[in-house]
Image (cartoon, rainbow, N blue to C red):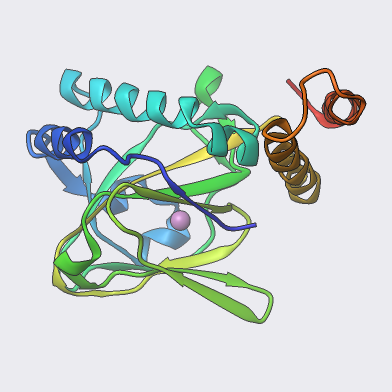
Amino acid sequence: MILAVHAIPEADRLAAIHDRIALLAWRDGRETAGSVARAVKRNEQAAMDGAAGRSLQDEIAQILWKNPVIRAAAQPRRFSHLLVSRTGEGGGYGAHVDNALMGKGERRVRTDLSFTLFLTPPEDYDGGELVIHAAGITQSVKGEAGHLVLYPSGSIHEVRPVTRGQRIVCVGWIESMIADGAQREMLFDLENLRASLRAQLPGQSAELLTLDKTIANLLRMWARA
Ligand code: NI
């Protein structure tokens, strides 16, 4: 399942994030790529290990944790460290697969879902689409600033070359409590059904209680907390 979420609707919040990104130092993106991806990665990454980078990382992580659609779709157990990437003219990121495990020691996460949070408005650059390859189908996404795209980490994907301007995104990975994507999608559908029924039925209705029970029992069956 590929899902788009308007993660940062507030223009002032997005502007504040850009102000903070402007203070960060930049490094060659190949430093954080695996050996295969290194050959096709042409971008820069913000240094997130200083105080400014860490607090920016915390702020974005908070936004993601609190988002009800991201929570329902991803059933997150843990988020990876976040990367802020900048791709200028001539840059891009050729077709690759993300590493199955990211980070070290306690902070190591299994990558079930990848996300790209678009920070630059699409009119500010040409090219730079995120292209996700599924069996026989490709999906091309160029999100509005503040929109996040969530997609399975197991897919081959790429960032098309940027031919004008500059593309800034935040990317990261989610380890889900539900490792299986099909199970995760069923839970997401049931959560959405529950939200729409809640708007129509009293909370103690037999229908809602049955649905609450089913969602809870599926989580018991499938979740690895
Ligand atoms: Ni990737």
